[in-house]
Image 1 (cartoon, rainbow, N blue to C red):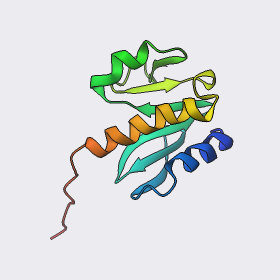
Image 2 (image 1 turned 90 degrees about the horizontal axis):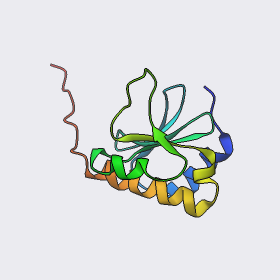
Image 3 (image 1 turned 120 degrees about the horizontal axis):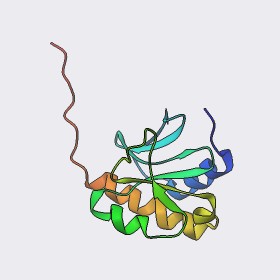
Image 4 (image 1 turned 45 degrees about the vertical axis):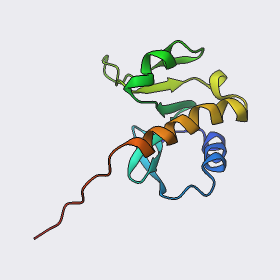
Length: 115
């Protein structure tokens, strides 16, 4: 698992005391989940942001942003933000907060009950 540890610490600081936040190894990096739903993460030096399909096209217009793409097929609703796009704490927060808001807007998953 390769990811920027300093970036992880900066994200943890922004997430602060947000309830329901967990961390999980995903996509070869580190992901932050809110109530079991991915909101953001890190792969190498890139910030991964779950921005949602409604905000996807607008996010792609911003500097240092590209589609999240592993297989030649972008994952709609997720973007990569290069290091220059999250250099300052203010820039990072402007990406992390909408990812938290999006995760909060998602429906709650029904738990599977074993019989």
